Image (cartoon, rainbow, N blue to C red; front, top):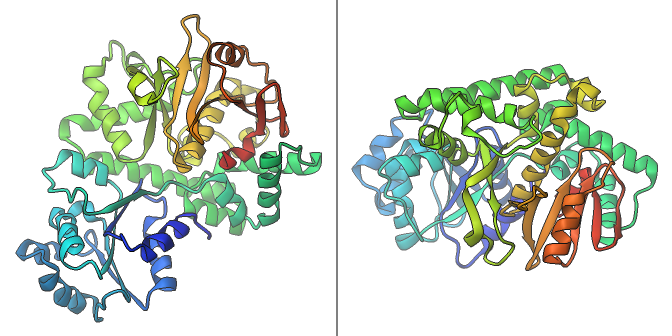
Amino acid sequence: MYRKITAFLEAWKESPHRKPLILQGARQVGKTYSILEFGRTHYENVAYFNFETNPKLNETFDENISPDYLIPILSHIAGQTIVREKTLIVFDEVQLCERALTSLKYFCENAPDYHVIVAGSLLGVAVNRAKFSFPVGRVDMKTLYPMDIEEFLLALGEDALVKRIQKCFHSDTPMPSAMHDTAMQFYRQYLVIGGMPECVSQFAETKDYILVRHTQDTILASYLNDMSKYNNLNEIKKTRLAYDNITVQLSRKNTRFQYKLIKKGGRASEFENAIEWLTLSGIVSQVYKVEQIKKPVENYRDIDAFKIYVSDLGLLCAKKDLAANDVLCMVEELSDFKGGMAENYVEVQLCINGYKTYYWESERGAEIDFVIQRDGQLIPIEVKSADNTRAKSLKVYIETYKPAYAIKLSAKNFGFEDGKKTVPLYAAFCI
């Protein structure tokens, strides 16, 4: 399956300023597959080392972490000669070996001709909590997210539809209604399947929602296992409580995260470490409220007001135990959850495209779902789950801040009117 990360890896390989690369991201998003597939097609051979399946590797790094010492031993373990520029060296689950992470500094300084990529599911957690000697300034870093809806459509063989969506997005011209309806159906399928590569692959092959749900449940179980395995003993229960509650809060009209809803009398001091763990692990993302629309936006964020979204829509549906048909038909019983689900979907697409997202609220309660910096401009984004797009909040924002334009995401077809760019939900990947 095509992954956009491949283009980044190709540029990394050819860069004269290349450093060892750390590829991070939540478990099961396809880090290992993407790296090995890239290695197979762009190098003569791949030397792969996994610190989870081969714990004895740690002993090698405990002895000495200079490349001159490591390369002959790693060649022996891999059963092949590691050649400069022709072999891709891969360290997987590197969060389990602090010294391997530290060794990247010496690969960068003393052996830059060796191409090294390391991957880890909980690197953010490990680096933050343990006393890691992190190779600051000596590594390139990239986060891999679940597949976005464009990659999902390509996996289903819908290349022509993707090109048509991109063309209509850039020209603000409506899609033919039949194609628009088809694309909206794919959007609802994406809500159910999500972007975990194994789930997308299974769906592309079988169209079996029950099989996909089983895989999603397995991934959710592995997340819960990680919360126990890579977490402070005192924090395990709090982390699970917080994670379980996120999907509940997305069902509310006001999706701002409230600690008191995790448990009666819950406070930030009790749960902030749990939220941090979930964020660092890549399982969730936080979107902070911004108090003023000025640059740099980060200076005006309210650290006490934020929303939390989960990293994958399919896992969200699995966690809520939503029946596939209910989501595909958007049944009336889902009315309380539709808005939160659409917001979560848009946040995932914006994150994958590299945006730092915020939300805005006026003193009188007008709210804009997302504010992003696009092409140097601060752009408001309003999200509606259906085609009822009357947006009083957007009118208030436009009158107050006069942005270059605004984006309205909904079930409506493409268009541009009164400074508002109307974008169907399925085209969020184009932003």
